[in-house]
Length: 397
Ligand SMILES: O=C(O)CCC(=O)C(=O)O
Image (cartoon, rainbow, N blue to C red; front, top):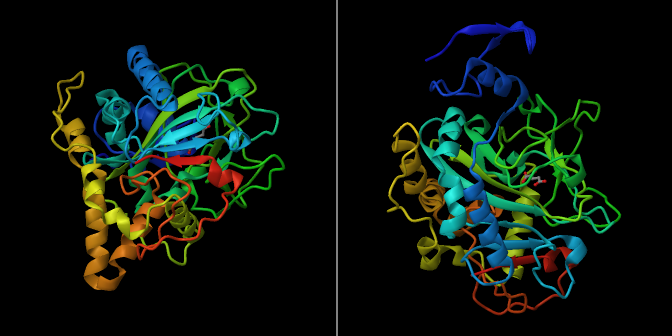
């Protein structure tokens, strides 16, 4: 274990304790560790192959054309196109998430070249807990393609935060014109801020919360990335992205990982509680009751645990097999068990909490219908007209 106190003039004249945010496994250079420790993010250039990225892109297009239906997948359109006729044209889709049941896309989360870096932040036992293909469409002029500055931990019930990391890979060249990632270096050392929806005239995309009360004068770094470059970042790092002023969607693919030693927290009474409620409401308005998340079909929807481990360049198979072998489903069971043992009647609520704050995990496996909402007692609920933001969500069973 590396417990050395090191100094590095590039970052600080003060001594720096290296091992808070990174794990000593001999992959990262000292300089890379110091960058992550100090800034809360690390870019690894040219990490994912063109061939893999092309496969992800092709699968995304097939999904948009509805040529494939992936159970549990959530398709979000940019709010500017919520009522557009072309339901999920590639240029209207903002993101797809929860693709753990899509072998072609979930491959990203298991890529050995990604996972070996993830291990530097989470440690060796890894859970792939949230995945997104981001497709920032060309902005319509309403400025809805912006992603407000936020902390990803707002969306996660896992702790400790330091054993969580996002891998985020550019699928095209990213620059300021098409809305590259923007980060506030060093903000991972702070705490989770309150989040709320920004007051934007042209509308705000569903679930695009903004961090409140952060220091607006902090230097903002635009991450210019080539296709295949990957940034790993801490869940407390404040980040977002700007307008896409080009004519092409700006694509990236990401997965959030946590150590399997992370625990679920009860978000009741925390700044995350309103989000939990909002997500539970989405679940209901999209036609699946909260308790139905226990449906055996959900279990079937978990990433296959029998997948053969892949080898990375060093011939190490262990890390990847741990990612594919430890499904989100198992983690959900862990969370439910621990809560239900003390509060048996809260079993369903515990599962909803899991679903709600981590919209990503396998827990959501909902019908994409907007017309037949069902209450948790199984009765048909009144169907309220959907807002533009609700309209922009599509969840596939
Ligand atoms: O894709 C983007 O522009 C931003 C993505 C992001 O910030 C996130 O998913 O947390």
